[in-house]
Amino acid sequence: MKYSIALSIVATALVLSACQREVSAPPTVVNVPTPVAVPGPAGATGATGNTGSTGATGTMGNTGSTGGTGATGATGDTGYTGSTGATGATGDTGSTGQRGKTGDTLVIMPAAPASSR
Image 1: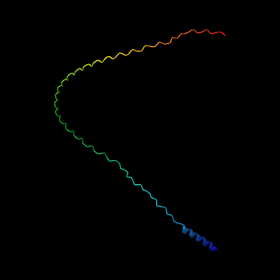
Image 2: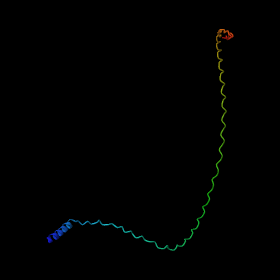
Image 3: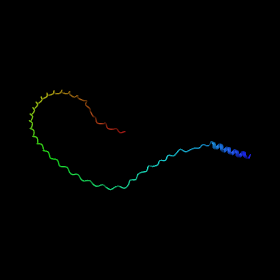
Image 4: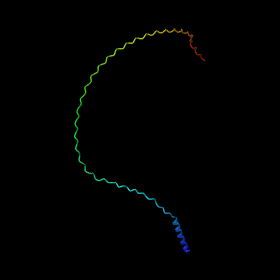
């Protein structure tokens, strides 16, 4: 029995280790920065070049002559005066209206004195 317990433990350990799978992590990508060149000190300034010569001035051309003034045009004739229109006819005299009617005569009496009771 001593061996059976030890043998059971070893068999269990072998079975469990056989079922376990190795898991490998995916490879990690590492970007290495590109080295940047550091500029060196500036060089000496170059010599200044010579100034160029100025070109010659051009000649002036002749100015053309001024043209003559044109003749004044003739004045137009005065237009005719229009004729006066005819006078309109006098209108007819209106009819005489009818004579007014005489109204009724009203007699106004003084009020009767109030009686005492």
